[in-house]
Image (cartoon, rainbow, N blue to C red; front, top):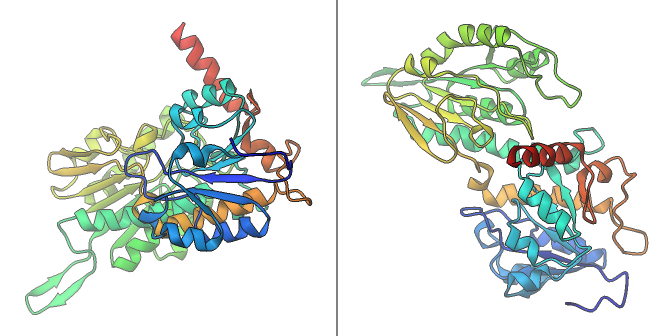
Length: 389
């Protein structure tokens, strides 16, 4: 373990991501330079940034120390990650250290328990309050923005049809029809990208305030039941009657679509069901559905995480890491989110302080020195414990 006699000597580490296929990295050379300017020492595991376009040499030039093993990168005060750490990843950390990133703390009780057992602090970017003050730190939004773009491109690539209208000597090809269900950050970017590609776009969200945003992008808002958002800005869970009305109204739009992208999800909750099997069966052969909520239960009946399901020649895709398909810019945005977050932990004398009274750091510290602090995490542990007894 590195010498910490100088109490204000801060070490942070960047480990290779352990999730298969994860190409993003939690720090880029530009953000390493920022940490170094703060007098922080940065250790980067060799090869961590290659798939995002960053060589070991570029990190070294920015002031980082390159280490070969994950264990060496973990011998630090603070580890930065993209995806949730595995138990083995966390075992490398020493008691009292901090891990920051997408920790999946409202669903993954294994991570929460491990943080607790090892006496660690977990800064979960999913828990960053969605306020004006926290916009620069909002990793959920930055990655959802890229995911919406990637979803539109994925749908266009899979579709057997052209997206824009084309007038040719062989005749006129009509534009593809796209339906976007769920108009948060990802949905709005999917609309904008589909429009740029030339598709005719219709969209729906249960929150009525999204109409203006949809129409400002040149898409048509589908007239279906709406409800006010909750205090976090997310769509509220609707009752069975309202859901049945939604399905009834959305069904003909889905049936007429060549491309459908669903984006409705809320961290820590099961995704709402927007498309039933009967609605899929009514779609045209060759139609494509991208269910961006497949990892949290799916907006589409029958979708599976990271699988492509062919249902009567309608392809249902459930990608769970669309932002990772654009690793260079996704990493750039995410790394800047982390810098903005960590700047609130930086003390005047160059140290790190996890201030639980801070309006942003407090809620983000879901576990602090082994103590579970976030109510959603406590509720998750209670449910899982009761379920196993």
